[in-house]
Length: 319
Image (cartoon, rainbow, N blue to C red; front, side):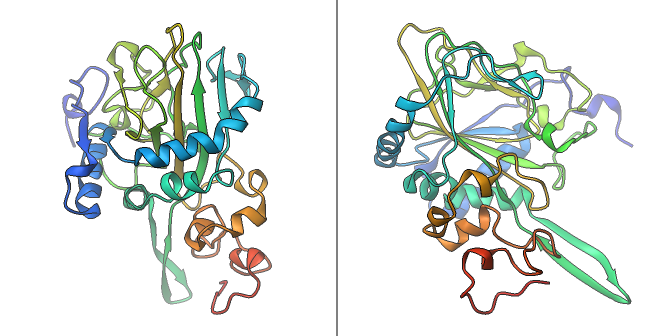
C-alpha cells in the first residue's frame, strides 16, 4: 500500500500546468495526446489558438441579441447553494442557438477525442445466463453555456463540478482511468485575465481525497486570449474569479461532457428545440443524448432514442 506521503493533497507541491500551442502539432492525434497528458498530471491545461478567431467573431454575432435580452443572475442560489457570482453575471444555454458554437465548440474533434479518452465506460462480466456480454457507453453532452462576466461581478467559490453525481474519490498518487465523471472546456470569446474574472483552479486537486477542502491561495488563473481554451477534469476545484476592472467584460464559451450513464446537468431534451437539433450533424445529435447507452440505458419505445427524431432511419437497433 502506498505511503500517505506519496498521495496527492493540499500539503503536497502543486503540479505545473501545461500551456500548449494547438498550432504546433503535426496532427490532431498528437495534440490530443498532449492534452490528455496535461490533464492526467495537473487536472487542467491551457491550449492556445484552439478555436479560429473568425469562428469566435461568428459566435459573438450569434449571441449578441441574446445577451441584450438576458437578465443578470444576481446572487442566484442553486438548490440552496450560492454558486453564482452575485452581480453582473449572465449565463446562456447554447447548443441549438448557434451552429458555429455547436460545430466548433461542442463538436470540436480534439475536444471530443479528449472526452472519449477519459469518459468512455466499458462493461465486462455482464452475464446473461452463461454468456458474457461486453458493452461500451460513450460520453454525452452534460452542459452548454456562454458565461459573461461584467465589472463588479464577485468571485465564485471554489467547487468541484462532479458533486452533482454524488462522487467521492480517495487520494491517489497518480491519475488512473475510471476516476473521472466529466470534462469541461472554456473557450475565450474575449480576453480573460485574473482581474476580469478568469477561471481559477487548483492544479492536482483531481487527485486529492474529496474530504479535503480547497485552499484558495493554491489557485492557478487560466488567463486566455480570444480563441484560447482551458480544459479541465471535473474533479478539480475551480471557480470564476471576481471582475475588479472598471470596463472590461469576460466572455467564455463553455461545454461539459459526462459519462453516458450519468444524468445530464442541463436537460438537453427540454433546453433545445427538436427541429433545430435535427439540423445538426447526426453525431452531435447522439452526443446530446439521442443515443442508447449500452447495454440499454435511455431507450424510447424499446428502441434507440435517435429514432424519436428520425423514425425513417434504417439499421438502427435497440436492445
